[in-house]
Length: 230
Image (cartoon, rainbow, N blue to C red):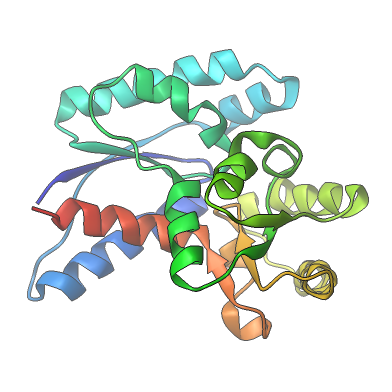
């Protein structure tokens, strides 16, 4: 079994889900008392969020790059960044290490293709929705991406940072997300990507009739299966 290097803490609420998902998949695959070999480095999210807010991606790349290097030195066989937004700097992190980095958008694209979906709604932080670093990997896989309008992007982002990252789950916020999903479905979306690892805390498949692709679940499962490949 390969050792998984997790870069977590962005936020810790969703990192908990990664740990749980990975271990559940390993147990399901191997049975008995088996669990995953994991090295977890959990950063101070406040420091990363401040970099995001002022656009200082170079500093955040330095911080997370140092973490990845330390995980490799500690024995990790590959790296998983437990957040969608910080995949903006994934190429820089990959350059600093010699082990693979499993990209969350690539794992999600593969799942969409397997499900026969080529028009998808994307929810996430304002960085994920307005910049190209994430969408371009979906588009390269032949997937057409639909995003909310500007006002809803701001609303989705505010709920992520002011509520979900603080562990606050609000029915009103869930209703707003479902409203946005419904609008994008009417525009032709065949499924919806929960493109922020915290959104899965709020939106579940049972909340909507459109197929839901939870990136935390997809990324965690992909990491676990990769760890078990021979």
